[in-house]
Length: 100
Image 1 (cartoon, rainbow, N blue to C red):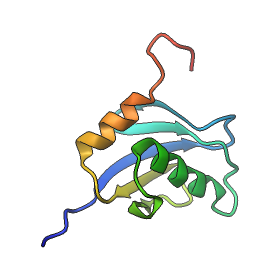
Image 2 (image 1 turned 30 degrees about the horizontal axis):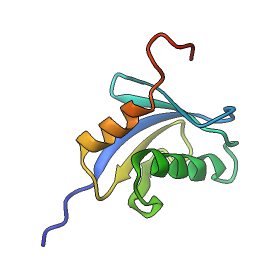
Image 3 (image 1 turned 90 degrees about the vertical axis):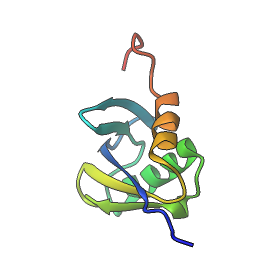
């Protein structure tokens, strides 16, 4: 049985936030705030944990493909579709009229 290629999303991470949040989607990039310092991979670990919870998928299915030390990262997600990823992320977006 052929395995489906992973779904990929681009995220821009703002570390040192008070809480983990999906802030917005603009120009093909999901903007996220992550409540961890960008030292020793802590923000990356928290990012994978947060996306795992939001997407309701195992952390083992999430991989940072590009941008391990950059704010902009490419995340590969196995075992789900692009549509489902977008639906799950949109569920946790703040309402358009709420303050960021």
